[in-house]
Length: 187
Image 1 (cartoon, rainbow, N blue to C red):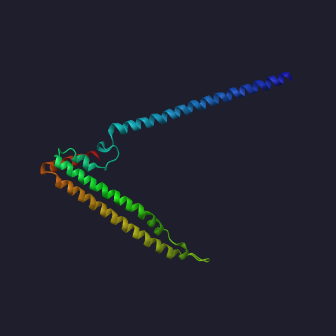
Image 2: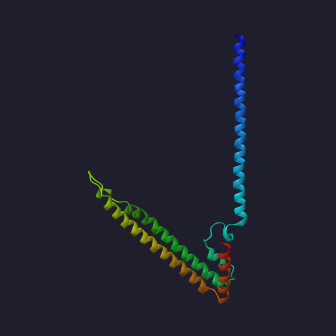
Image 3: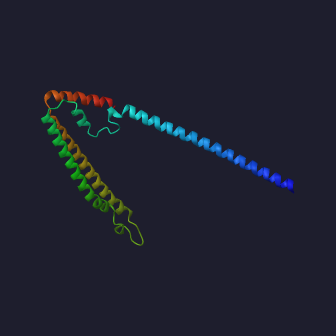
């Protein structure tokens, strides 16, 4: 009886030792995996920071890209103040547009949700009418998006034209050259 207890105790201790060893081994593997992931993320981040994204824009390729090029043109104080005024006007327009979009968003969402009761009865569902109704709504939304795109392009062209008119002919030539360099480095 005493020998059986010793034997069981020895088996129990061996089992604990084995579990402890597995735990250490799993922890070691977790540490290696964590280190590998952190090393990969660290190298990726370092690479992005070293190269700075497209032409030094740090991943935000288009934000104020034109203004960054214009700043390299040796502007006079009058030109700088005119550009600052232009930038403030554009910012005010964007903020007003953003507020208007916030107000319209809920109405647009409610409008896009169909009243399902017009397509259903207790006995049937009118699939053709539902599809026709939704196609009509999607076409209207598509036209609205195209209209917004055209408006954005028009605003952008107007902004570029205003900046272009502020510059002297020499600055315009330099601006064209700098724009070509930026375009080449982003390809």
